[in-house]
Image 1: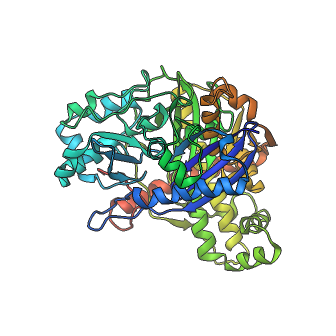
Image 2: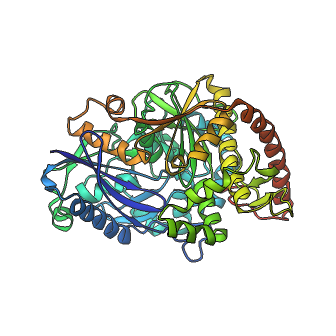
Image 3: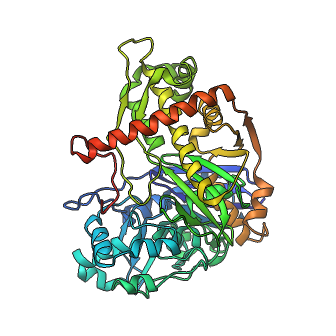
Length: 520
């Protein structure tokens, strides 16, 4: 039997997952990791490549042990990661500096770029589909301004999934789907736009060769083989961004396909031609897909999964004990209770993530509005349901924005990630959208997408699109309740107006934003 390995370097953890060539998961090994704020650097989120390298090796070794296979039967491996995170290297290939995805230290540099080069963000966005909010240019400028001696040593830049493959195979390379999130990349040509850093007096020779996903770039090095048990004949294959490879793992590989990925953040993606220009209002992100000649229009909902985890840990000790006694997941208990709450959660309006406003991206202060003193109406179950409804409503708003500029119409949406395990949440999403919602058998699709890339490199699949069509299997479909849909349409209007009012409190300095993009 032959196997494929996927390394998934997410925001909250890293894991190694082994699949067989039919897409069946054989084993997984996972370690949580944290990205800490640097002392004296507000809003920073550093990536500890030294510590994280050890976690990577542990996951690889443990996944092989759990699978009880001969590592020589692992034909190829690939990697996927949180996007936007970058790693910088010197001439010898030693790591110098790295940050994780939502590092927001470059507040001053974002403003500096906008003020000194009027109109440049809009100009670069038209090419890359990215604003400066999470882009690499402001971060590089921050390093130049604050650690000039370190900046002088920078010879190469890569994304975090590229770093994983570099550690294993010794070659620094990248792919369009992840590199595109730097904002220094062309959607149309799927190549680096070195003229961008040159324009703002930054290095323009640090960009590694971009290869399409599924390209063999090296083999497992002898040193890594000795540390992990991997075989030196195992191919190291380009992977990509977690959302784009996750989309492939959901079968979302044709133009017009739509998916919602419900993880720590929620992403709403629609596949479009790479010739489609980003919208003029800059309020939607556009990224290169892992499928050649395609891009993805993307909306992002901040912290949906993390808000649920916070709510669980802050308020739901009784449900935790109940779940432990029954041997089930605590979310299963919470969903059963929330299913008894009427549609609309007795009027509760959660204020957490706004709909995406990429050009001026900030959030209101976290809160619940319209709470009642009636414990029969306002309780853990009703508040929990309101959070599920709200994540679906924000997703609907983001998809409407994408539809406005793409003109893409559709009658079904693929839903995956941890959130799709909940029957209530999946039905709520169908009702809010008024569309059929399809749930794949493999819900953690990101690792499967990376395994597809590895399989392309190994010659198992012709390309990622054909791999997706071969491997993705559907588990369930949820049909919308159109009576509930009408209620949610009205609730969506209330949410939008309420959120705007809550933003005014942030603007007045009376409350604190949940998250604010650099430069605002």
